[in-house]
Image (tube, rainbow, N blue to C red; front, top):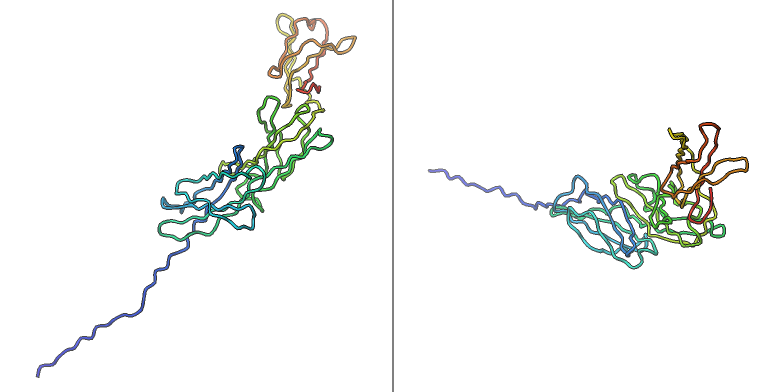
Length: 289
């Protein structure tokens, strides 16, 4: 008799589930800036794990607690988003970002950053101003520099850095003559981007003289002329007046514009006698140092 062999197939039962993973690529949001034409600029940094298929979603709210609305989505390598909104210059705007890619789920949300809202308050009969603003994040981002720059428009219409503050407040004497003066603050990030506040203004009256110039050198040339050189750190200077001390007191011997910081006195007798000179600064309000 021939034996028969029967083969019973071995069948594995059950299901294999492939579970998508949470994206370990939380966007690194860094800066939020407000610009004069009514838009907010949001800037973030790409992480090393970002891929060309990464898509960033930008969310916005007028309240830190929400609700947040999806504004738009942009694809890598874009890392800037501009949001046009009518209230950009009048109140805080809040933003966070998420990211996803072709093979990963949506990430957790980034830090929520606020735009800087600046308040400029005249004090002491409009002769000084108190600037107050909000931080972009509490606590401060570890990548933010430790101080804010305070910018003020000078008499020539150019914004100058007039101070720095490690807190969200700054006191400054008036810089203009019975006119509106404009300010904004900025915060730099280690990545190189800046968060800018909107511009705010107040009508101020400058009654304080500029910083006193410092004479750095007085020399006599071969013709017997005295050459006076000085420095001055004041930002609001209209001109410099140069004086010589006489038996009748200080006598004006010359006036030069603020861009000039030297003067030649060609009526000097310094080759024969000791002469004393001084320089003072005059600002755009005719206040003297």
